[in-house]
Image 1 (cartoon, one colour):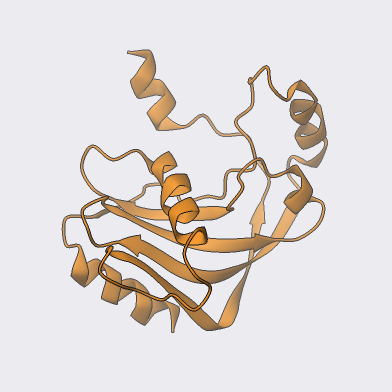
Image 2: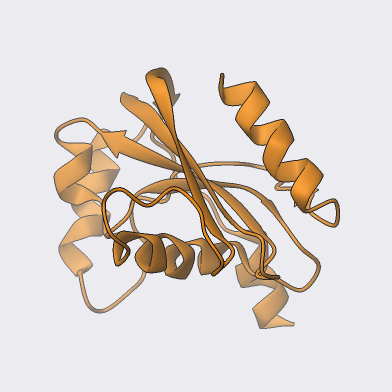
Amino acid sequence: ALRLLLLEALRAMPELVAVNEPHVTLAWLGSEEHPELDEELGKLEGSQVHFSVKSVCYDRSGAGLLALRVNLETPYAELCQNRHPHITVAKGPGVAAKESNDLLQRLAELPSDFSSGPSGLVEKVLENSLKVTGVVQRQLASESLDLAT
């Protein structure tokens, strides 16, 4: 089911390119807002994290993003600094992966029975969520390197 939903989204937006290293961002470390997170997440580094993929989200109106909404298990759900945990799967040229946060926020503001409409926003909920296991690790985002140059 997930594969078919992803193919449907990619057909609707052929300009999208797959993200090189898809991941769930728990926190942007080095931020002065939450210095305690660096220590807490450091203790969890290398541990397995379990989460569920709940839906496929995208914007056909030109935002150029394709993301998977996920549910994290404890303690990662409590540590995650994203209001809407997700994996950015693909993005259009010139679109930052972090813009998936805005996409998911706009979807969250719509009525609960919404699946797609004239706004171009689409959220397709999986009948059976996909269980995924990953590993907690620190990663320097390539977009951060682009900003530094």
